[in-house]
Length: 180
Image 1 (cartoon, helix red, strand yellow):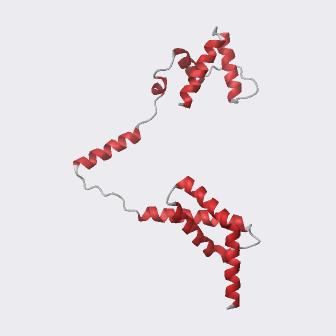
Image 2 (tube, one colour):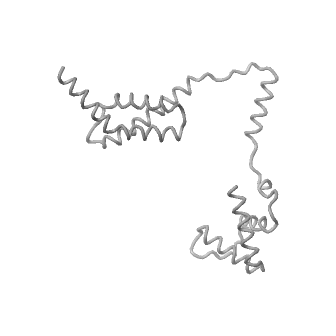
Image 3 (cartoon, helix red, strand yellow):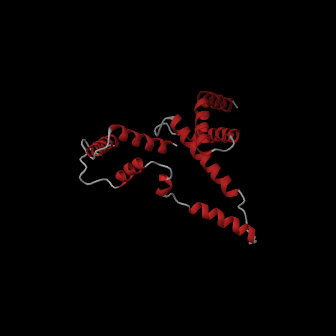
């Protein structure tokens, strides 16, 4: 009876020492995969109790083992819930089929570069097309890092007769378009 009390005390002390680590792991899992936070926390506490005696000191640190087991256990739990969730059954009526076809058409919609150019200025479009069809004779110093390519493009446009202001406005327009 005394050994059972000692084991329970050791388990409680270890839990108290690692409670913040457990909560941090649950929170990271929650941020990545979603779900009910309290249920995930309860599942993680159950996993802690289940794996407490499976730790092998010569393999890794306890904190590493604990985080790994909690993460894996929460993934298993999430997959189990997903498999148990009933999937909608299509009875074949015409309205349901039309809705499903409409959703599939939305999935098939792909990005078109022409949509990107909608409302963009001619100079910015020229720069984008220049980037997509990089001239073979464009000398790029110091490797293919984006800042070196950008500098080489600016020099290329300057040599083509563009003003510095025109180049800057074109690059600013492209940056604004990308960041929106």
